[in-house]
Image (cartoon, rainbow, N blue to C red):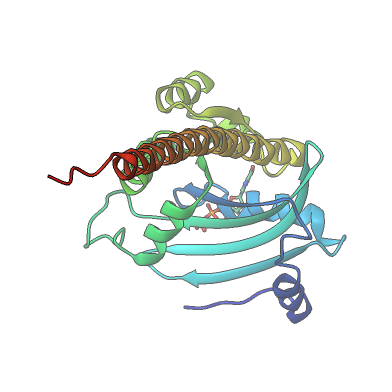
Length: 255
Ligand SMILES: Nc1nc2c(ncn2[C@@H]2O[C@H](COP(=O)(O)OP(=O)(O)OP(=O)(O)O)[C@@H](O)[C@H]2O)c(=O)[nH]1
């Protein structure tokens, strides 16, 4: 069930360098799709570019009949910021239920804690295309939030002769779920692969900056409320001490 590929040196580095001084931000990206659509391949191509530069590590953690999960870690620079990318590949069942394994704690926690998703299908496999809507439903059901960064990818465009899913179908489906859409070939277009990962990172950044600005305005409002309550407290205590003073200054009626 558990497989390992990757050097012990890499593992050590992963542990020792997992601190925020090495990178600006961490991104947990989950790659979802049906069997054979190219989930492993897309991660490998993206991570592979970094391999020679000693900046990657690769793990396959869990592989069983219900869930297939692989993990990759790499560093990248997007728009001048260094990021630590934690990629997980997931072949999850199509419905949330105890029978089909979507109650699996790993699927649940990976889906809920992910920063963004790549939703993959193969243009040569209609079933893999239809499966994406099921995966999308599972993601939404498990996360229950609409601001999920999502990139919809039509893979294997190099197999033009076997193509059965048209571009317009893919584009429409991406539009319906509010995702950005790319047609690519992991085999022949490594630059395109890089681009889709950069797109999801930018989406995550935009969600994070929105959350940060909301938090800042909440903090400002909280600060304002705090200052106002302090002011009114001071006012109350001043008027109380004034009352005390006036009552002590009043002449005592001896009769
Ligand atoms: N022609 C072509 N083949 C591809 C492309 N991407 C992946 N493949 C091939 O498709 C097969 C499946 O790729 P994987 O990356 O293992 O697919 P997967 O989605 O991880 O599959 P599972 O782990 O079984 O779910 C492999 O033989 C790949 O070499 C592509 O862009 N073009």
